[in-house]
Image 1 (cartoon, rainbow, N blue to C red):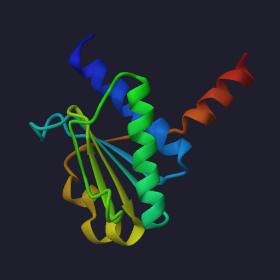
Image 2 (image 1 turned 90 degrees about the vertical axis):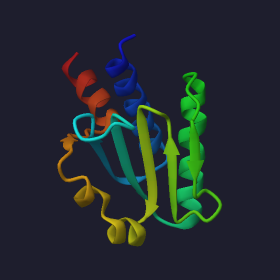
Image 3 (image 1 turned 180 degrees about the horizontal axis):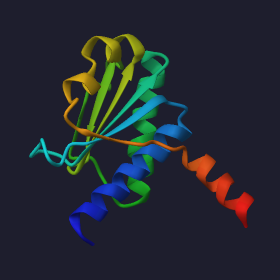
Image 4 (image 1 turned 135 degrees about the vertical axis):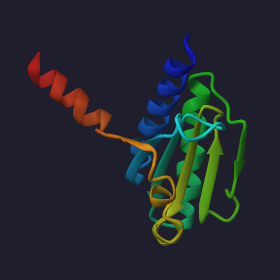
Length: 130
């Protein structure tokens, strides 16, 4: 499988896991042209430290089902900001105040923002048209 296809699938699995964990404000940034350490960044908000921690756990568990394991993770103990590094895709799950303070979307403003459509809405839309 080409590297871009693998990264895109991983990004989609992360997004699905975040949606299933009820994470909010999911953003996907394509950083391939401006970064040499990853292809995509996925950023999401959790409602509390515990929600951030459990959301990160659900992402790890979900990707493990697809045979993908994180290269590393940081911040799970505190739960304010968890970084999950899957190589081609890096996921950030943060509390709202932390996300507002660090404003990664502004920091990476040169990245292409990928439109995030809920997979559940896409599935419902597909069923409607069948």
